[in-house]
Image (cartoon, rainbow over all chains, first blue to last red; front, side, top):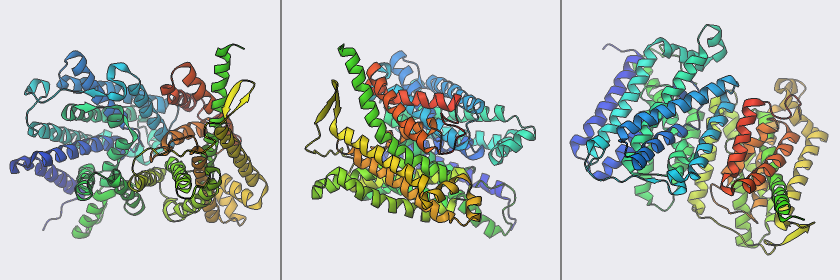
Length: 335
Length: 292
């Protein structure tokens, strides 16, 4: 039997996961299950968008929810205030988030904020945005924005059933995954890996670290915002804690980290695992212990960092290397 | 005297007394950073832990929060030491990104452990002296807040003296300055790390206890304090002990005055703006270059 290389296997597993998800609606799942899956796919999409910046480029953007919030608020506000279609809202939200990402990356580059300082900076910016949203009347302050839904109007991203939202979310996840895949194959992918492994060395070898870090941040921000916009329209309700809070912020990050940062299917796997945990615990334990699934997430994060820093995808890869007896040699590992 | 000025001074006084408690949170954070070079993203959860210790001591046994602060400190010194020994130590050689993620995981776990154990409900204790005040030339200061401020200051200065004068304290500082050099002269870096994390955690928990007489207890109660504490330690230079204290008082006053000038809802915006400003224009902090 011919044993394929890891990048080929990675691509195949990713494709398999996406196709598998695309086939789910054929089984006519109950609306509740479909809802759970849509949430899962949106988490995977945000995790994947973070993965581009946090995994492939190694930038610890731990306040990443700011881009999600910008997308969600842009789509929600533009629609409720001006009747702008969410399809346009996605683009505007994406553009705004890209601009924010550009500002965050240029500021941090200009002032040499790296690693922990960069992490703190992004966290602070996200909480500033949350405070601003909490105190801005136009976006409903703490009440947030209620987006009327339920009618049927594809031009306004309005559908009576959940299935179209399922495919919109899945399409977004597939698109983000493809963007990462495409970037990874180009020179930019190699540059980002160089920046991740050793920024100074990358710079010394002639990589335009400023350009690539800024480009990567903007792109990741725009993709995250798109997921935020879809989230807003699908759930029909957003508020500062929901789309800019610290809690959901870490949930998004965890999807990518537990799944395996710097791998193509890690965030998808992470979302499947973590959302399954949270849904199972909710069904098994009822609504009473509010933070149970997050407690498990915290334990999972500790366990992953201590024992398998490459995440679930790293485990899959090790198993793969064992089966193929080819060892791991094609990709530098993320540590 | 004009009432405007008096109100303003009132806010300044509130800022100073709150700054004292901020200081206690911040010195723990800066000590851990100075020695271990790790930003402890779970620091706020340790503050929250101290709050719950004092809350339950009061509810179950009627122990005054200022007494149970000692229990908090001891308990969380041990928890911090165990965390360092069994959770942080194994990944000390790993890249910084892993350490950051690890402490985020610890924080997430602790917050939600509190959610599960104690529910997300906001809890308050009613001590008899909760609303007593003392007047300084017309400026009213709440007595529990003042006591917390004084205790926080005494503890911080005590810790400072410990680091300056005792053998163990000097070992901690030596390990902070030069890990390998300290090991060469026979300082067990491992033990020092464990002690440093323990002290940092203990200080955070005491701060939590000191807050309970006038602050709501809930699983996420530590978050605003630790976000402010990051601002403070960056302002006062990461790893600089006295810098953290000075920074704490400055931020306490800035937040309080900010909420007077703008609106109470915007107080965090004030400290975050200072934070961004410091990160951008003086990332080494006010006391950059000087070791504690």
